[in-house]
Image (cartoon, rainbow, N blue to C red; front, top):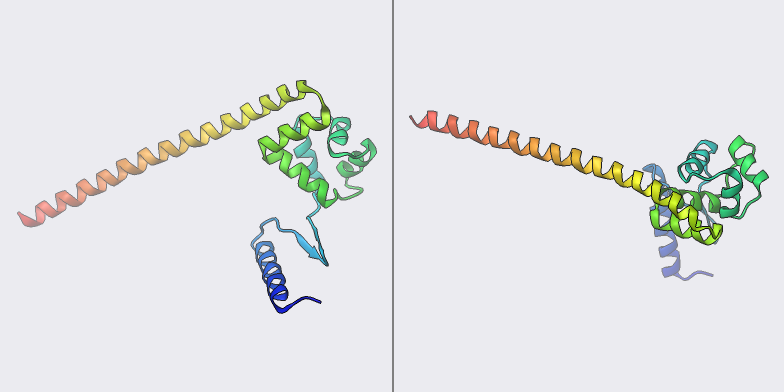
Amino acid sequence: MHTGKQNEKLSEMVKRVEKDRSEGKVAPKITGRYIKYHPMPKEEFIEARKKLNLSQHEIAQVIGASVRAVQTYEQGIVEVPGPIARTMRLMKDNLIFRAIMLEDFMGDSSRITSFLKIAEKDIAVLRAKVKELNEVEVHFKKTMEMAQNDISQKAISLHV
């Protein structure tokens, strides 16, 4: 039996998860005592594997599945299970997790070279975004200066 305080905490957690899910955030589904993560659509699995620059055989080794299982995921015959989906999403989006997984499971430092190439591409994309944001900031500052000058000129003309 849960105490009143435990029930409150569980209720709060369920509400938070339901809110995240309603807002479109990836949130775990709660089933009993266990948390079941959302399965991954085949397109997302394929995209993640290609971003990681791994063959079906290699990704099978990394996630601890058979090559046949990877093929069934990619063909859409079977949904990618939640824990594997979570691992794939982490490897795709988190550079540090990606490096650790590839090095630990592949035991092949040449894969780290491949990872570094992917990281360089990610860094190049981030640099381009930063440059774009800097340009937007410069444009915004110029626009603000022009607006302030325009306001000052109008104020001066009203006083004259």
